[in-house]
Image 1 (tube, rainbow, N blue to C red):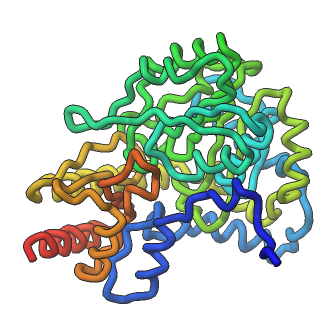
Image 2 (image 1 turned 180 degrees about the vertical axis):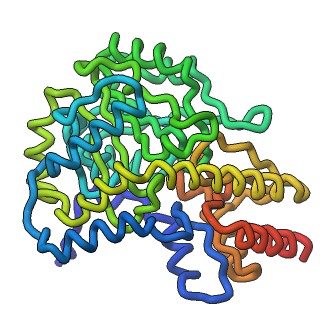
Length: 386
C-alpha cells in the first residue's frame, strides 16, 4: 500500500536550511548564534506590560476578523504620519504575523498557474508561498556593485511581462539589506498598472532603513484603487518577533474578501496581543529610533570587521539587520555554515537558504550587542587562520 502523501506542491517546498543549522546548534553554550533575524534584546517593557494587563483583565475572547477597531485606528494614524498621506483604517487588516499577511495577500490574488516575479535573493517564504498555491515563480537577481547591492531596473521590467500576475518585492531586503531607490518606484508602479500586475510589498524592515526614517514605499505613490498590497509586521522594528502580529494595507475592494479569508485561516488575532500592538504604535517611536541607531553601529562594526579579513566580499546593507557576505573559494555555504558551528562555535545562516542566488554567501544577523558581534568576528578570524 502506498503511504499517504501531501500534495506535490507541498512535498516540493524547500526545508529551511536556517532551521536545520539552528536546530543543530541550538542549546549549545559554546555556539554564538547569529542565524535568526531578531534582536537579542526582549520586547520593550511597556509593550509587555500592556499585553499582560489586558490578559489579566480578561481580554481573552474572539475579536473582529480584521482586528480591533482601536488597533486599526492606531495603524491608520501611524501609517498616515509615516507616509505623509491619509491611509484610512478601512484599508487595514490585522493578521497573526507578517508571514500570515504574506500568505493572505497571496491567497487573495494568486491562483494555480499564475506567473509571479520576485526580486532575489530573498527570505524563502516570499518565493515558496506562491508555490504552495501552485503558481510559478521567476526571480530577478540583485547584484553587488561598488560595495552595495543593486537591482537592474531594466531586467526587472523585462521580467514583468503581460500576463504576469504579481511582483513580490521585499525592501529593505532580507538577506542583503538592499533598499529600493525612491526614484525606481514610479516606473515600476506605472509598468505594473499598464499590465494589471499586483505589487505585493513586504515592508517588514521599512523602519530599519539607514537612508532615512522610513524606506521608500509604494504606499506613498499608489492610489487606493491601485493593485498594491503592503504586508508588514511588528516583529522587527518593535522587537516583537515572538508575538506573531502583523497587518495588511489593502485597496478598499479587497478588505471584505480578506476578512473572509482571515476567518478561514486564523479567525482573528488574540485580543491581549492587540493591546500590546496598540501600545507599540502609540509609544514606540523612541525605541524604534534607538534600535535603528544601534543597528547602524552594529552594521558598521560587522561589515568593517568582515572586510578586514582576507578574501571577503561584504557589500554595505542600506537597511535591515543583516550582513550578507562571501569568502573567496568557499562556494558551498551550507557546508561552510555547518563547519563554522562545529569548529568555530559560530552560528551563521547559509546563503543557499534564500535560494540559488544566495549560494556561496553567508548571512550574519548583527542585531546583537557589540561585544557579541566582536566575539563572533574574532571566532571567524581564528577559524580562517586555522
